[in-house]
Image (cartoon, rainbow, N blue to C red; front, top):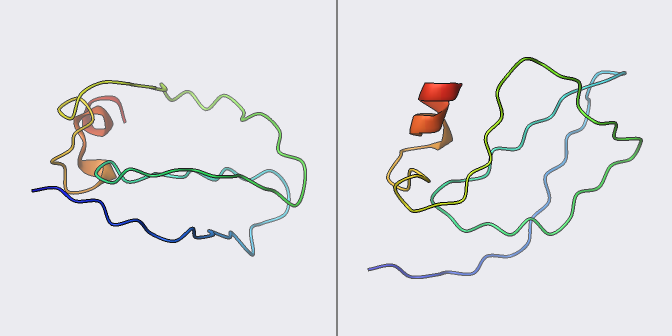
Length: 82
């Protein structure tokens, strides 16, 4: 039986990042509906530089979203494409 327990909005802060260009990746949970309300930065946010990795954006079923995986790095797209 599934149930929804609404949570309170939270804030993730990345303090102490090195000067210059820095890459930050957010891995949202694959088993929990998550609403990303806003992204803010204290400075310029340039487009990411190409890093040679393939990128995947997917809309599909609970199977293709790996609903039963233990964590975001246990999903089949990570193992296959990571």
